Image (cartoon, rainbow over all chains, first blue to last red; front, side, top):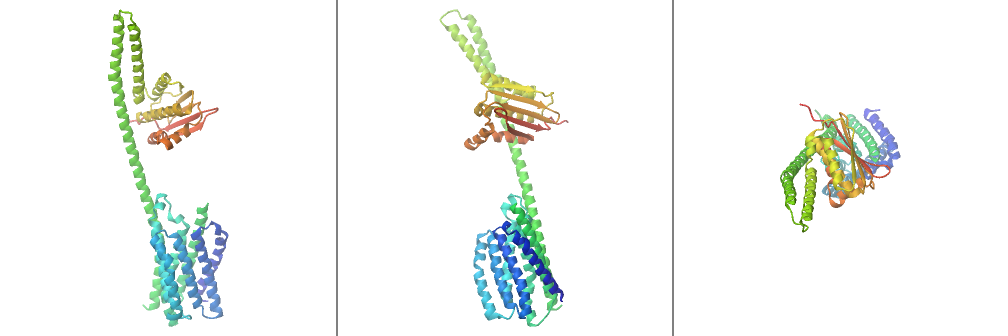
Length: 218
Length: 267
């Protein structure tokens, strides 16, 4: 088994395990925390579904694209809830509409159903990275936090965003070039291995976020 | 370097960049908060210094007025009383002038007494000359003359010197408490206990009133914007003291004033 496959299964195992404490402590999560939980559930479905489909049908790319869209919608809700600036909130509210349109155009017209939809996935990852940066920016200059002397590393949403940001940053290059690699049948193990490592980091940061959410509730 | 190596390096760089951003965000926010806290501390210190300056200015003005009243008006009234005394000796007719003169003399006496009380309230001379314990004792005696409440003073101090500024602030706090007891507590007896050890000055002000001293202080602040409690807290804050209100059995309130390191600095 290739190294990237091993790391993928480790990542999937960690995500499945992480679902247990998240499900048990679901009540301690706030509204945005609950959407982070839904993202985690979708990640598990994504990982398990992609692995199963690849084994059964050999091609799971349409499933990957659909899950990318589903996760984009979930994360858009998450960022809509955590970001305070009205103009960014409005953008987050309406951007899924052109994004969904782009998804269908890419799926049926540009790259096709049996290819990896790099265009949509890249745009979606770029948008999510922008949301992540906007949230970091908000936390840095949040007057309320400064007034109350609240360090951001005590906030659950910061850790959820940190996990997402690291994973999305790392997967950006992979997503951008994946369809080209598939086209030329370049079987490269290091890039997916790095992406799965960032996925593991994401899970760890999500777990820290859960611990902070529990503390915040107390 | 081929395209695959570039993408690998790019992915690794993005991963590191992502981690770096998260770490930087944490450190930056910590720095922002520490900077703001430092600014807030400076601001509080500045406010404290301003408050001290205002209170010092107030005290100086009170002292000046008290001295003017005592030295000028008081002296003139004493001369008036003396003249009235001499005049009564020379009065021969018996048409009730002697009684009227006697009344005027008594009235002058009352004015002199009131003047002394006002002057003493404005600036306790005893505080400068005899120290806090004696100043409080004389304040109690003065209050006993003018009010219906019986005020007792008990001291178990062994003459530790109190820093002048701290003494004045404690004196004002006791004065403010007494004013509030007289106004709101409906007490008939008040006991002021003074106790000092080398490191701690304790003054307890007990009253046998309705036990609503603290409530009344708090209420009057909310209703009328009165600064009674705020004044007490500010003054004690400046000198590093504290005040605690407790219920007294069977009735009334005990206000406990504590000031640490109250002695004047040596050298």
